[in-house]
Structures are given as structure tokens and as C-alpha cells.
Amino acid sequence: MREIPPLQKANINMAKSNAIVITGGFLDTGSTKTAHGLIRGTDRFNIVGVIDSKHPGKDAGEVLDGRKRNIPVYASLTDFMTTAPVKATHCVVGVATKGGVIPDSLRVVLKEALESGYNLVNGLHEYISDIPELAELARQKGLEIIDVRKPKKFKDLHFWTGKIKEVKCPKIAVLGTDCALGKRTTTRFLVEAMRKAGYKAEMIYTGQTGWMQGAKYGFVFDSTLNDFISGEMEHAVVTCYQEEKPDIIFIEGQSSLRNPSGPAGAEWIVSANADAVVLQHNPARKQYKDMEYYPAYIADPKDEIALIRIYGAPTVALTINTAKMSEQEARAYAREYETQLGIPAVLPLEDGVESLVPVFEELIKKSLAQVL
Image (cartoon, rainbow, N blue to C red):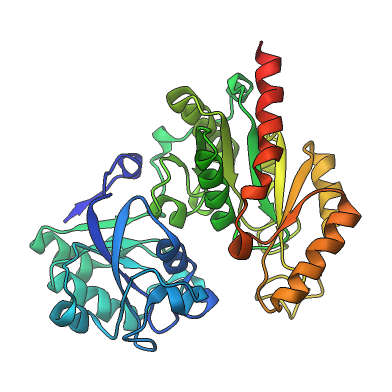
């Protein structure tokens, strides 16, 4: 087995590696955010199939959001190996399990994948490389196990230094009013829209899926020791700026400022010295995800924007997750928010984010004027 050290992960070029994604029958649910991200786009892998027993024969994109992406769904690994017109070298765990553990049912599939000659890519909290049977099988087969959430060694971690002030381009934090709202997807859309408009835009990933999608700079927020989160955030942004000289940097958010089970967001504004925020919100979601039993309620965007301002950054746009709403309802909310907040409110999945390009062009012009 060749286990990939965390520091080397960002430098692995898998752009031409064919991969299949395991979803365990949950492709059409919110439990497969990683799979959804890879289906929507990745620069690190070429996704040639999804393994999902519930939707065999369908197109994964159509199952996800009704958009054909030419990624077939297969009932099993055997089904893929015997009927797919292409081969794959990597097998990606695309489902989030309860507690991030690898249950026995998934271990069986991972063992089958190794026996069939596939390298494994895992973003769960539990590491495949820590399971003796699977680690030994990978070693015998000469295969790679990439546990994306495996943290860096202590000597490779960074404290915050203040070098963030050397970054002169706009830094945009893409935050949300809760977790699992599509912040990563919106961040990726924003980068693509700015690149399409002729600007050099970069993304800082802060979760395992961002790395799997091919983002070059970042760290996995929820597997980083708390003392080093601000430093790792700064290091990622500063390194990106020094090496790429981008016009603008977008930073993928995690959870939310007020989510009691895992508050996050202050580091994006304070430690990364964000110049502005894009806030993602779902008007239909009233309580925090999977915490309906707890008497805590998601803040109105107006109140969240006020809190973000207290931390030190203006919110320049609201992006709306339309889950559990009709498109008509979502557009009505967008119009209401635009009037109330005085900033653009857009539906990223339905309309894209190209309409926000002028907002960021102004920020780029302002940053250039300050440098000159």
C-alpha cells in the first residue's frame, strides 16, 4: 500500500484518472454531498460511473438535479466492471455515513474494490488506512489509499503570522446560515464565472470534497487542530496569492457562525481578512440541519449579515439554496431579499452566478487602485 501523506495531496495530478463513486443507494439524498460535488464537476478525476443500487441505468446528473452529465449509474462494482465501456483506476467514497464511520456494509464494498484493483479515495472521518484488513490488502495489491481527512503532521502545521496583509487581491468568504447548503458548489461557480469573464480566480478549499474536485490550495477545516485553523487558513490564502497572483480569491465556507453543533465562519472573516462575504441561505430551512430537536433557529439573512458586519466584512450578495421550495417560491424570496437587503440575491443552481461578476469587478478595481 502506498498511503499519500497529506502534504503531497494537493500536488497529485489525477486529472486523467478515471474514477467511480460509491453512493450506497443514497445518490438522491443529502447524504452524498461528496458524490454530488464530483458529479457537478472535478478537475482531479474523470468520473466515469456512480455505484448506486437504487438508480442503475440512469444518468447520475439527471438523478441529482435533472441535468444530463453522461455519467452512468451502475448497480454494483461487478455491474460496472462487466458492462461499462471504460475502465477506472480509483474508487471514491461519495457518501457521508453517520458519525463519519465506515460501517460493515461499506467495508465489504471497499474490500471488493481493492480486490478488483481499485485505489481508494476516502473523505470520511474514519480512515481506511487504519482498518488492518483493508490496509494489508492494499499493501499486497500495491494500491493507494488516500484518506483525505487525515491531518498533517504537527511539524507541517502553521500558526497565524499576519502575512495575510500581504495579499492585495480581494478575498471573498462564501459563508452560510447553516451547514449543507451548497457553499462549496457556489464557491466553485463563482470561480468559474470570474474565469469565464477573463479574470484569474482561485478557490481555497476547506473540506475534503473541495480537494477531490481539484482545488489546489486549502486545508480540511474539521480535521485540523483548533490552534492551527487560523494559521492554516492564512497559509493557504497567502500561498495561493504568492504562487498564482490571482485577481480574486474565493474561500469555501463551512457550517455557520451560529450553528451550535459546529460554529464556524469567524476565521474566514478575521484570520483570512476577508474583504467581502457571499452568504448562502435556504428560506425553507428553519432549524439547523439534523438538529430539529434543539430549540435553535436559523437567523434571518438580515440579522446574519449584521453579525458578519460586526466581525468586519460587508456582505455583497445573497445566494439561495432552493431545496424544499418551488422555483416560484424561491424567486419570490429572492425579490424580497433584494428589496430588503439592497444586495443581489441569486439562485446559483437555477441561474448561475454570472450576474454577480460586476460586483466582484468593482472589488478588483478598488484593490488595484489601493495598490497603485
